[in-house]
Image 1 (cartoon, rainbow, N blue to C red):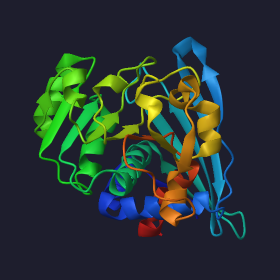
Image 2: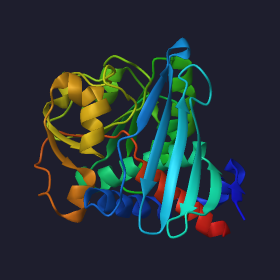
Image 3: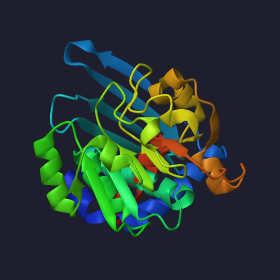
Image 4: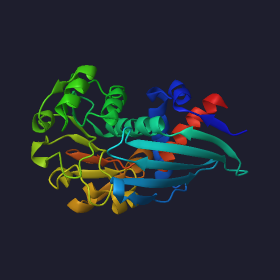
Length: 293
């Protein structure tokens, strides 16, 4: 019987405490070849400045595919469904609402990067953006680092103020948020840079999450001048404007660092460019499915 799982059911089964280690294993599996996953196919919807993505993936026990739409001017901006199949028989197992899974697995992957790449003594978090992902990132990153200070900026001051009040943060300008921060998160829909390299400390981790597409970038070239880590090298070379427009050299995939197939990133500025992978959706959806199967 095909199991249908809506967002209310998913919310009862998905927790960052289990999702973060699950993403760690999924990324290592991807980067060591234990998962089959092509770069996603993206169809533009120019009439609405939107796009539609198809994200298939297969591992030893399950096949999965996420169908996702991103409409920047429609709330929620990201909408999706995830289909799971049994890898041995091809039998459809479950159809899951993908919105919350996308939200949480994205923040959980940033938490994995922060756990691995940020200073153990990181105390100041800067967030550029004030939407769904900003809130999710605060929840996830608080599980891997003890932040004394959170500084928030958004292009919408009302949204920034509300978000800052919710999470106990200080609302500032973008520059004031970033200067002296140990960890910086960019989660905006801006097609042009909101983060400038001149603001960054010598040792800082930037989790660059918001920009997707060859022509969009949240970070200027100076901000991309540090060690660049990606979730997928093939995907970043095809659709990460932050990497492409800066001509940045990719040091490693995050999964390679987790698995130990690449040396630990050198100290200094580090940028983790996150695009989102189907293997992350598969691993998160499997957690939910197994809770109800």
